[in-house]
Each structure stands twice: as structure tokens, then as C-alpha cells.
Amino acid sequence: MQLEDYFGEFLRKTVNLSQFKLDTLDDRVGKIYRALQNDGLLGERVQGMSKQGSWAHKTIIDPVGDNEFDADFMLYLEDDTSWTPRDYLANVKAALGRSSTYRNMTVERKNRCVRVVYASSCHIDIVPAVSRYEAEYVAYYKDDAWEMTDPQGFTSWMKEKDDIAGGNLRRVIRLIKFLRDHRGSFTGTRSVILTTLLGERVSALKKFSDPGYYKNVPTALVNIIGDLDEFLQANPTKPIIMDPSGSGASFDHRWTQETYAYFRDRIHSHAAEMRAAYDSSDKSDSVSKWQAIFGEEFIAPTSNQSSSPFGSPATALASTGLSGRAG
Image 1 (cartoon, rainbow, N blue to C red):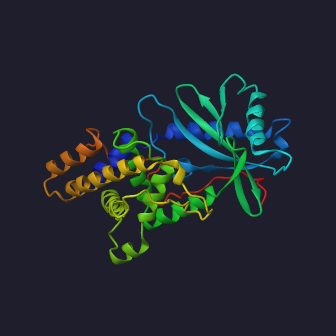
Image 2 (image 1 turned 120 degrees about the vertical axis):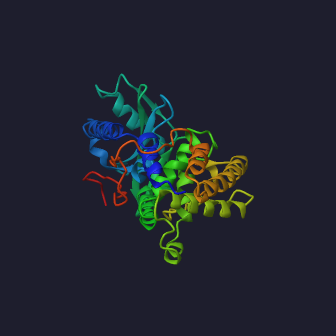
Image 3 (image 1 turned 180 degrees about the vertical axis):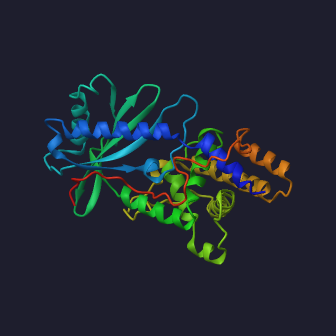
């Protein structure tokens, strides 16, 4: 059975990041951005910001237990050829060190970002970027090099795919992330790869042939995972996963053949399990089968409330930028 109301309840109560946490995230990012804008040395170089990753795609989920939730944002800075990529990361970290708010907090320099850690709560990754020759680049500390990227292009692609699926692609991605993070179904497959693989399975042609192909969450889930399984089974060797924004970058370095093989096997099992749960005509049996996949928190709705931080299929997937970004 489809049990659409069960899925709605499960997403609202168990999977989705709460509205309080989303509001907290917005507030903290805004304060970090203003601190960088107001810094006496870095501030004049700041040109804008935009959400990226699961925060921009609306696929962020509640973390396991007391683990931190996280979000990334791009910090667009003036292109200065006298600075190396490492300089950009170092200077963002230094600017936060000069702030009365952040100097006593944990601020870490990573390979592609500067991370601000809020103890037992969340962390926020600031990704320095420059615009050059009508393209965007992010700093990579390890190689002291620039990497071409197009996070807003990725977000636009994600929105197009989600629109085809009636807003259900982002819900499917959240459910699969839940299996990875909360159920331990598979490990090592990064969210950007999950998003790309699942999004690439969404097809306007399939929806044209069958208008109900993505009609609700359980139908979209079973069909998208079934199509993903078909793709993976046709590729025993790890395929090259390209950035769907068209940046020319690949995500190949983000997983190994071993990780891929394990993911391939787990998706094959899940596709069969989900199809069996979906096709069962007995409600009790169907609930039991879905619970075997998602856990005992997959239960009947306890109220008629439908509010959710990512609830409406019509909610736009927008990359939020502040005024002032060059270009």
C-alpha cells in the first residue's frame, strides 16, 4: 500500500530538520556574513553569499542523536591575483578571529571551507569563492589550487528535477539520507552523489508516459529507487558521476569502487523491499514492511497538521544571495 499519510507524518516528525533549527541556521549564517562584511580588512572584499548543498536543495535532514546539523554557504570575494587559494581560506579564518563574537568559538580551516562550530548544536561551513572568466572557483587548501564549481547551477538543476517530480524528489532524497544516516544502511556515499544519482533518474518522458509516476512520496520513492537500481545493476564498475550543473567537474574522487559496490548492493535490496511494501494489499503487512525499512517511527498520523519546513511541493528551491555580489 502507498500509505501516503504515513510518509507525511514520518517526514514531518522524524526526518525533516525542525523549523526551529532552520530558523537558527538562517540567523547564525546572517550573523557570520555580517561579521565578515564588517571586518576592517576583509570586509571591502566581500561581494555576496549564497546557500549551497542540502540547505539550498531543501534536502537537509535531522541529524542522528545529538550530532550536529550543518550547512554550507558560498562567500563571494573580490578576485585578487596576489592572493593564493590558501590565502583566501586563511584570511576568512583570520577575519573571524578578529570578531568579538567568534574569536572565542571553535573556528577551523578545512580543505575547502572555514568551519564555525556551535558546541553540541551545528556547524556552518564558509566556502570562499571568486568569479573569474564567467565561471566560479572555490579554494582548495591541500593543493593550493582553484576548483571550478557552479553551486547555483546545481541548485537550478535540482529545482528542475524536483518540479518534474511534483516536489517529491527532495522528499525521496531526505528519505534515502535517513536510511544512510539513521538506519546505517550504507556508508561512504556523499550527499552530493546521492542527490545527483537520484535526480538523474527523474525523467519528464516517464512522467509524460505515466502522469502518476511521481504522484506522491511513496510512488516517487519506489519508482526513483527502482530506476536507480536498474542503472546501478547495469554498471558493476563505479561510473563517472559528473556535476549536473555543467561545470565540467566530476564527483569521482568522492567515493571508491568498494563504497560504490556496497551502495549498489544495498540499493538493490531496498528496491525489492520497497516494491514489496508498496504492492502489498494488506495494510498491516504493508506497514510492517515499511517499518522494516525505516524503523518503528514509521507510524500512522496522530494529527491533521501538515505544516513542515519543506512541506509544500510548490516551495521553491532557491539559492539565496545578498545584494552586492559582482556580476
